[in-house]
Amino acid sequence: MIKIKRATKADTAILALLGRQTWSESHGHYIEDKSDVATYLHENFSVSKTALNLNNPNQLFYIIYADELPVGYAKLVVHASNEHITSENSCQLERIFILNDFIPLKIGQQLLTFVEEQAKKLPVDTLWLTVYIKNKRAIRFYERNEFKNVGALEFFVNGKEYENIVFSKKI
Image 1 (cartoon, one colour):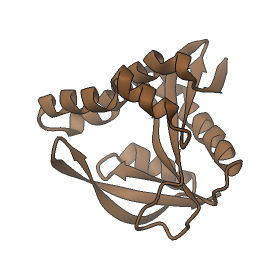
Image 2 (cartoon, helix red, strand yellow):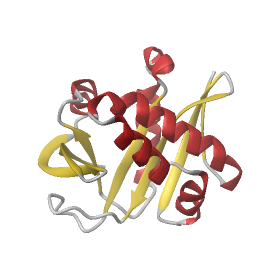
Image 3 (spheres, one colour):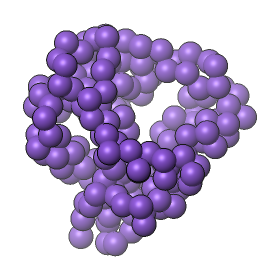
């Protein structure tokens, strides 16, 4: 059974661990220097950093469960701007990740649909996100879900640049 819920302060450690694991699984193999991966994970997915993010009212986290196991999550950032997004009422889907072992269940689609429904309840009209240019599976996923390529930006991991595509969708 699949369940999705908004994360609360009580979910901080679960969210930090999911963040570390899913980011490492989805992006770690693209990063040449593995010490850069460790640094990035420590800086972005510590329990203290996750707690700070959860306390920010403009950052909304959702955890997806499969048979009561937390197997992925999504993060919306309300009123996040980007030079390639013309709307002044946009929302960034900063993260949407599923643990590798659970990707074959196709629950990423359920999580994306749920997050889009949540975004429609906000005072926003555009949902945008970025994807690493070599992440072909993710690019196909967003294109199937009617996101449009509207530009590019550089994503930095420990000072090294990685080119990302900016995708946008009216909601």
